[in-house]
Image 1 (tube, rainbow, N blue to C red):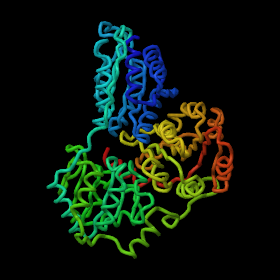
Image 2 (cartoon, rainbow, N blue to C red):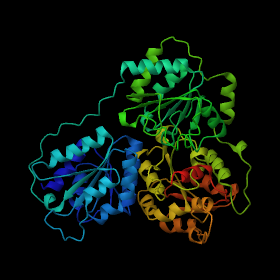
Image 3 (cartoon, one colour):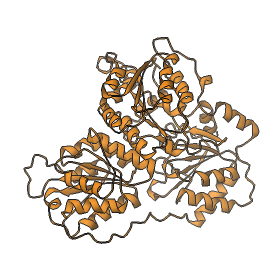
Length: 542
């Protein structure tokens, strides 16, 4: 056994995977070692797609996924996806070859450690045969326990060295639950008990803690909302307001703004979730619960910060409340209002479809009705992105994958591939703009090759819509001739349909009734929305 094989074997035995990548000479042996040890491998057409698919798969499965790349350009091609994963604190191993230390003139040579750190990832490496397995275990533990994206460099000369025979490998246990301080629990319970209009907003750190947060909300009369990345967490709760922030419905925004207490559960309370702070009323008190102490108050001052796991803290606060009366926000009248207008619906807009172009809101409402409820929706970035986020319901927090921390367009298709592999029992849905589609079209081949029953919705306005709508001046550089995207999809082996009216969506119904042996791409020619308010706010931060 050589070091490359020892590393791949160790990662597979630790339970890491699945593996996504593009195989070159530098990562050939380690990839085959992973496969030989039982890790599933999915070949993508580009390393950027591999990184994003692995990121999405880790988010939707709870496992430490793996990206494998060639040294130099292979890693560089994956950097956007790695940056997204790192900014999202996705537990991920980027297993990349590296040039030998004694070969400074190698054409593949770049500062791979510096490149990893530049986008927020942890840079680590395998140092030699004697430490290869220990180095691998250390990288895996960092990814799992610290929820970090780790770039593990495998120099070519080290990879080729003989490795000691495999030894039994102790499992790396899940990280210990961060228990809240009892004094902080008492203080948070007092804030909640005194609140007349409390709202709980759960974020990434609240995923998996839905039952505990709901129980506390029921006891205290709080309304429930999520950040975008936790969308679906309170899917079937009658007191849920959906996504807080730019995608919030008018009623949700009103109720959050009128809260006298907002508690963030594993939620950063950043500019997106609070609409640049405008969703926080002038007299609203803020509390924040997070396992990372440095996250508390990082985006805005809070009245109380509680270091602790969201589920453990919610249980502790509920016990502290006991039978203490809490007036809360809830009432029969409010429940009826939330049922009627808590989510975006056709009542919130006038259909502007023309017969040649379909209103993206009308499109999204119709697709929400047509597509099976058991779905996992992945959304690319762009002017369109609020429509699928606001109008497509999802069954739980593992039904929505939002790779938006880096705000890069072009990640949505690979996101959907990774989410589909993580959630094989659900219909995978990718929502893209035409710009993002063109950037990532090569991964249609991956979806076809893997036989994924993927629905790709392209909100096609033949432009980089965000820039068209939010910048004045000559738009020649950001508008494009209309493209027959459905024909491109058929060229890859997909079913491709063009949609200009709701009647054209019969093709989607037909595809759903069939064997679904190839992906379906819907090229929706959409009307001009004049510029989405969520991106108008986003550009204030640039």
